[in-house]
Image (cartoon, rainbow, N blue to C red):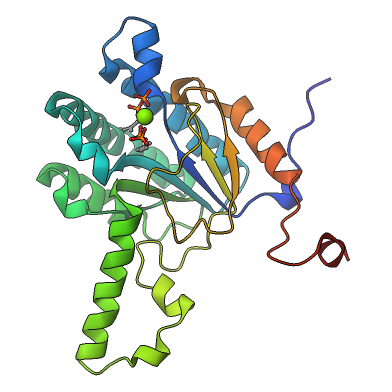
Length: 246
Ligand code: IPE
Ligand code: IPE
Ligand code: MG
């Protein structure tokens, strides 16, 4: 008998993933770190496909942080090459499967040709109605919050906004994730229990799932297990257990 899968009626609307462990996966095999990133792309394909099959609304993948710019130039280059290849090779599939691409982060710091590929894929998939695939690229959560504050301050200066009218909703509307529901489930692979500047505003009430599995080994069965774990949680949002169960 197949193992019981997650209950399709109680799936998270938005899953966010910190895809960590590529470097260690390669190092354990005596391979260059870039080979770990390459293997990680296969996991990305499988998890995107699975999320689509399950009708999850939004999948946010942390692919490159603002802090990752500090890595050796060769590794950054290898990651950009993989991103380029991913965008080039996946566009047709995204169109076929109805995937809508968007991104979160300081996109203008990416190589110009990668920016062009990204914008092309975002434009061409904009009318799709399936999974929203949100790639966090050159993303940092504190930077995102500062940027939102600057945009609101600018609106106050030009008279279109009053400080008293700045609400949580309004603030959220100036983040890269404007219009998306907050992640219900945040997964981090690779064994570390930290957030590494990922979606600090949006994950304030997310359920956290830390997996020891290195990202290239995180595939459909591990994803389904994380969803099952999520379904076992009681989300109380400040209320009592009895209130929520009622
Ligand atoms: C995650 O894997 C991918 C990126 C950060 C781009 P790592 O490259 O951080 O892998 P480890 O943590 O060194 O194993
Ligand atoms: C977080 O992983 C960033 C991504 C997965 C893109 P890191 O490997 O960069 O995180 P730290 O530096 O170990 O916290
Ligand atoms: Mg890491």
